[in-house]
Image (cartoon, rainbow, N blue to C red):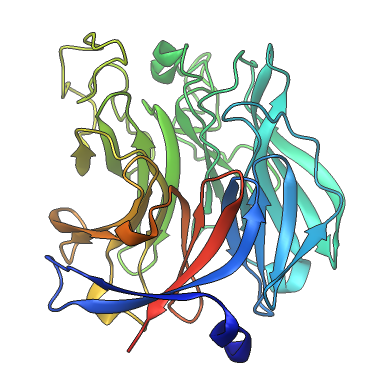
Length: 367
């Protein structure tokens, strides 16, 4: 693998590090290219990686080659809709189970769906849908689609507000604009916060989200972080706690695309304020908490992909993770929309670029 990487395209970037002790030279390698809007990555125990393409394909990166995986479910692929996240079961080494999130249905009736399958070489076996956000909505936008396992073995998935249905983010009867918590086979855990509320969807873990496309758990702090797109400004990073309401669209720092005011409130009683917000919008997608040995200066920091700003944003947090100390812009010279961010087992950072002929990039320390 090391010999192959040496043959790959390498770019050395000296990046100004306002929040770091010194400039860190970064090495950027192209691990795969020619991918259709690559959306998500997952590292396999054998050193290979899975990558999803928004048009509904799943591939395996092995020694610089892209190998197709068969048995992927049919997805609704239009606009922002398509195949989203890929996630390994915590006991993948034993059961070979993976999870896919994707847009299911048609333009007139669709929703975020999760399916579970067993990875068997180049095929998915026993594919089973375990959750669908119902009732279905119309339109090919704002699906959320990020997944994360918690230490108790439950599975979280984000759902978007569907763009035209933002009021649904505040309604417990609707799956839109939420983070859902499920068992690993798609059932509703009995200790979910709204399970006894009349007319509420029992799977709801948190509400008041717009289009959350970043979700990451920090095992050292035992904290869950999420970020979501605002409209014109008002992107948010939040510390997630079960049962909390994160405000959208009642409390927001964003404006509507027309310039109109969405709400007069940036905060509201009973709603959780963001840890961080961006005005203007950077369009965050993909989120990781850095825990690795390659960049010791970045321990516990958030790594956020930015679509509009075409960068990787490092958010330097306090030791307890509850305040932002500074921010740093990385990969500006790459000039690519960053869709997903993952920390590899060796401490390197992998990202995907949002493009019809997108790439998977590996960022490591050059010295």
